[in-house]
Image 1 (tube, rainbow, N blue to C red):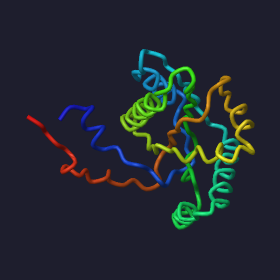
Image 2 (cartoon, rainbow, N blue to C red; image 1 turned 90 degrees about the vertical axis):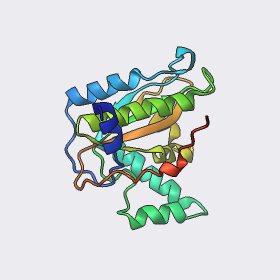
Image 3 (cartoon, one colour; image 1 turned 45 degrees about the horizontal axis):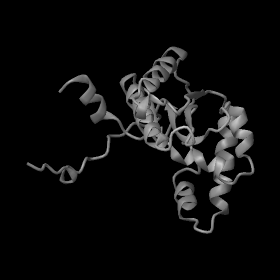
Length: 187
């Protein structure tokens, strides 16, 4: 098996980070891998924002948890509370990817491809990661959405697309067991 396929097969979702931040060298390499992602008609209707600011990450986590706690359906909030009460699992760093749906309507698809590049690049460098759409909860209520957009430097017309948490795992785990029954060949 080649190195790319090994990286894909070994990637897992980390839910227990320590406080060590990956080096700037690694973060730059991961950001470079991100922007090499393909995008429809090469629109690149996304930005790659590397966030190492602990206070900003904590503020977004707190706002996201407040939003989840305010929802009528408490199932997601309760699940997070049962698993350590941390939306970002203690990750010391993240990459936030805002997108511009006006510039290019399928930008969310492109955002997913870009985030997969981030996750695989991080894994190849020994950095644990989590694809985290739940960062969007910090923007969901609207109360602090504009504040977070400004603090993160979103360009005008951009909104939260997805994020990837980055750091080093306290406890590593095996990747999920792929369900090969999901593969269909038509001849």
